[in-house]
Image 1 (cartoon, rainbow, N blue to C red):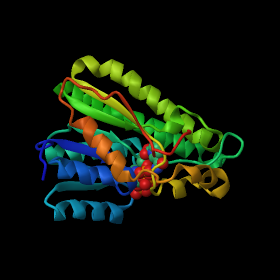
Image 2: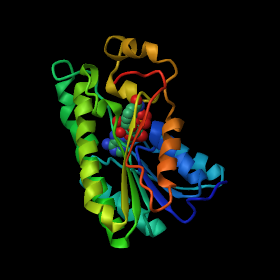
Image 3: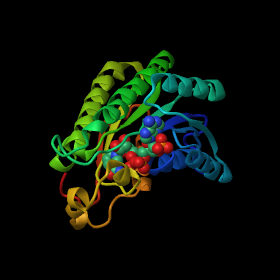
Image 4: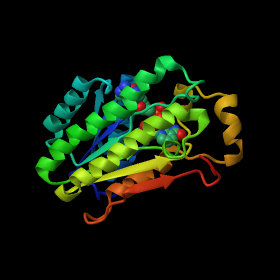
Length: 249
Ligand SMILES: NC(=O)c1ccc[n+]([C@@H]2O[C@H](COP(=O)([O-])OP(=O)(O)OC[C@H]3O[C@@H](n4cnc5c(N)ncnc54)[C@H](OP(=O)(O)O)[C@@H]3O)[C@@H](O)[C@H]2O)c1
């Protein structure tokens, strides 16, 4: 086991599947105590078990982080059980097929609440603790769809545009206080994301046929591990990672 994150605690939201799960497994392998957060208990426990079976330490917290009190509860458990918070991966999020006319309007609020407001609250809560302790890494999941706003996922893209702006604003707010805030913008990653978003052949799969092999959650986890293992004076501010064949968005 490579232990460059030994004695560090990493809190990861959306850790029951996809990028969050892969990140939890990788950061644990690098020596961090990982605090895994998501709503589905079984998937979360499975991830924690996998980490423990290979010698790592994982704490699973079942929570809906679109509720402010649940964010506070997660942070309280993290601090109570590990006594610290070194890395926060602000990852829980969801997509939504379509643009302003074609997306399901009944899902707009839920998506904004999760992708923007809960992500911002998590950044704020973690940032408050990190500022008090003079160090910390916050990695925020943006998306290539958040700066190339495309019609097939325009509404979702707007949430990632917003959270990217907030992350950069936050970086400027806390840069001089020992906190590194990074945004990572993946292209298409194969995960549960596409099903949750409601993508189908017409609104998504036709577009990506030409991309070839897509990213795996482990590819993004690897980039996140790179970000949080830089020497203290180095910040990876903004990282774009795509399938090599993805020309747009
Ligand atoms: N896949 C892509 O192509 C892609 C590209 C760019 C950016 N991203 C971003 O990457 C992040 C992770 O996506 P992914 O691809 O790994 O998707 P995923 O496999 O669907 O994972 C999403 C995770 O978020 C959790 N989650 C959803 N709502 C939650 C809530 N209210 N409270 C707590 N956890 C919640 C889900 O777990 P539960 O259902 O158990 O709660 C799940 O663990 C998202 O922010 C997404 O926007 C994805």
